[in-house]
Image (cartoon, rainbow, N blue to C red; front, side):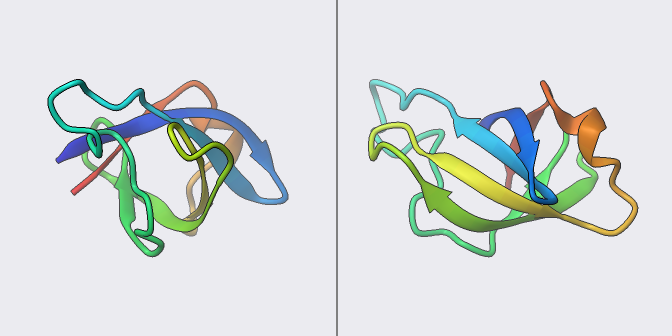
Length: 84
């Protein structure tokens, strides 16, 4: 499991994440470039949703995540999310 980033806002029914800074050892650590469809989990390992878009700066992009049914979107703001 790897840390993806923090939910910074919601927009049009999506959770918007800012990806973490890439690590010095692994330039792809913390990012999900070209991984649309990746399952995103919260810190209790419950499924939150799936990545539907990657946008913004190449070095630290934003991710748009569509949430699973029953996930309360506003409560995700400020949460750190993870991927398998």
